[in-house]
Length: 100
Image (cartoon, helix red, strand yellow):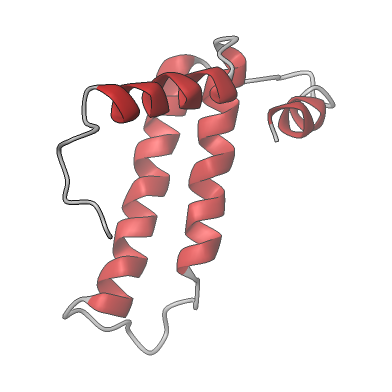
């Protein structure tokens, strides 16, 4: 995914946004995801004239911006994921009740 996003972004002279701008975009996308969750699972239904979006769409938008953010900082999300899974599998290995 990181390679595909990088190839897409590299088509444009502007390239990646600055880290601060991308953090703002991530926050915006997270807000849009929260709004969809609230409409679907919460007490706030959509207005009749609101555009229909899905949680899947909003997760995709958030993932795209996260990948852009990582790429712009030369961070491998695979390595990041491996680090966090190692943490969960060691530090938190006895934290939760396991299924039989």
